[in-house]
Amino acid sequence: MRRNQIPSAAKRERLLAGERLEGQRLSELLAAATMSAHSAEPPGLESALAAFRSAPAVVAAPPARRTPVLKSLLSGLVATKVIAGVAGAAAVGGVALAASTGHLGDGGHSADAPGQAIAAAHHPDATDSGSMSSSGDDSSSASMSDSSSASSSASSTHAPTPSLVGLCHAWQAHEQSQSDHSVSAAHSAWAKSPAFSVLVSTAGGTDGVDGYCTALLTPSTSASTTPTSVPPTHPTQAVTTHPNHKPTAVPSHSHPAPSHTNHKPTATASASASASA
Amino acid sequence: MTDRTVVAGQLSSGTGMSECLAAAREGDEGAFVRLYRDVQPRLRRYASVLVGGQDADDVTAEAWLQIARDLHGFSGDIQAFRAWTARIVRNRALDLARSRSRRPSVSIGLDDLLDRPERHDAWDLAAERMSTEQAIALIATLPRDQAEAVLLRAVVGLDPAAAGEVLGKRPGAVRVAAHRGLKSLARRLSAAPDTPISDAE
Image (tube, rainbow over all chains, first blue to last red; front, side, top):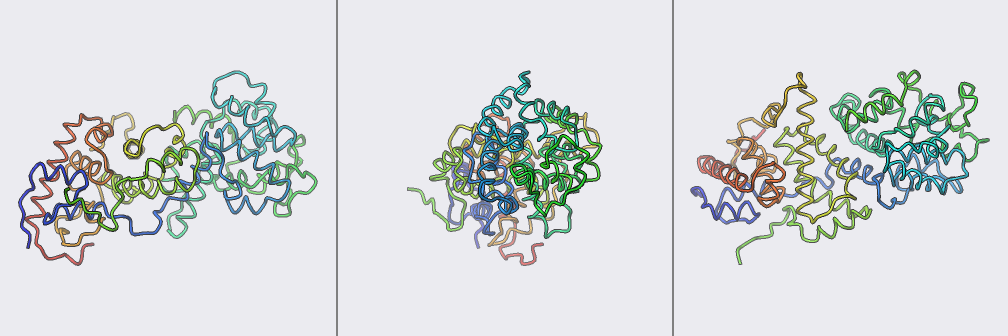
């Protein structure tokens, strides 16, 4: 039918600019190339949204919409504490994580968390570790791993900037989207991507990420403000290994990861942070 | 007025997307979703030219982590946003190539990327009704600089200057590459039979 020659330079330019020219097969080709996606929802939206929700400098989206898991654990007074913590984490990223969970842990100073965390995030090399280490103290070690409180203060000052919460949301969203496929997310190129290097090293390996994220996203929030009532879904074990820890440490133990125990999160986290910088 | 037909089912021209972008920067989740729906198909097609369809999803997913994280610090209109995101996708594609290299010390360019899976005999796919995948696969068989130039201009929707920024080239070089690519495509389309190839894959 149409046996057109090569369109003129002017027509080519119009095609490149998005015009459609009748009788041009080239135009049909470009029309096909710019056809809107047939799927109602492009894959990957969930993980992108998760990252968006925990991005810095954004007024936090309603935390109740974050994850079903989180939502299921929230109630009443606890929820308001969580909102403060989540807002802090969403506002500043990784450093805020330690700070906000810290405040959830001791329950009294939640209002300070965002401000302190912002200061730390904006001055990652600042030496004002006093406020950070006091706020991060027992809790960050509880949620990060089985490290002592001494190393946790170091981790809160030198914590990597990418938000671990956001990375966990993205990780889980991606895993859910991949659940139909035979490929395990832990071994996909996705898991090895630089974007997750901090998360993977913090969790002690790709195999540990699921457990780490589950512990990170479910944990101290419910237990912390009501230390006397540990949820039955998190059977207590080995609280005695951390005598100076509150029961907030428990949830992370209920999801043991093989590589977790002897892992020093502070060293690897900061190392990978500098490596990926 | 030239017949810039608004074909149903085509990617939008970007009208209203700048407002959407501004709202997303301030944390509007719905605006972010609309932004994603507008930009992601473009980025994915660009990525599939760079790394193949298999890895395009991972590359764009990683890119979106960075986009979402840094969106608040971005300033510019939707054109600039598309250029910025395309650059991120391109860098992620390079990261992928590096991470797969057995010799990390050797500097790597896009030409060193692995074979693109779509490099089957795409010339036979010049059918009357071509799918998006087939069209992208056809463009992907061009030399890489031409394929990138065509994609960035015609699919991502960038002008020559913006496309040049993504590629690190002057606008004139992008223009030459894009036009060479189109000429090459037109030649091959003219040589192809008119009857649709039903069994594409």
